[in-house]
Length: 200
Image 1 (cartoon, rainbow, N blue to C red):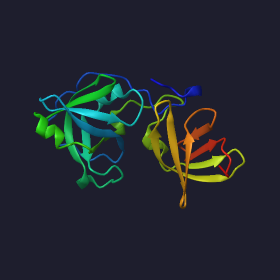
Image 2 (image 1 turned 180 degrees about the horizontal axis):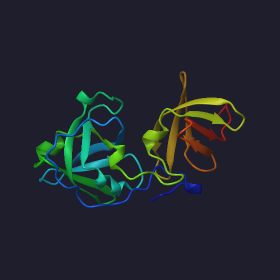
Image 3 (image 1 turned 45 degrees about the vertical axis):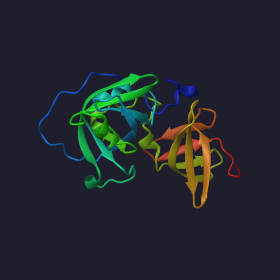
Image 4 (image 1 turned 90 degrees about the horizontal axis):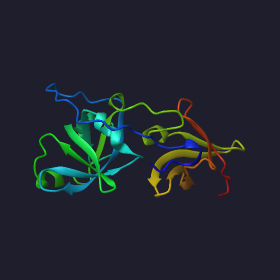
């Protein structure tokens, strides 16, 4: 995992095998976390290629059900489709997954560009100084001088590290999510402190 200096990461997740089957219909979770997006099909047996929004997503296999939607910002249960996860594993520097009922390439391609999410209760809890991307969205960002810079509206994966999108009215700032910039994250208080001039 490409961890940011000082241990500031989005989340290191553990790997586990496929979840056991369950015939009970899943209930839409109130604690839904968007994990990534379907990039396409892998092979001809219904496997999906995934674009992950986070570091080392091996532990996502711990979620028994994944939820799929064309919109990543809706909490309307009717917009999300639950599908049982059968397998999830790394492949070629990316991630692939197999879902119940998705048995051929056409069925996999039908999910292309949809977002997938899981209940927080089915995912490993974050360790100290580790965060799910979803936990950072909406947090107020203030610099070390006490000036409010806005709220986190999104994150971008730049390769070396994540970048916070901080919105303030019509203005948007892009702040590297590294220890030199991000001094403190307090999810419970809804606040991030950064070393960033208000004029930048």
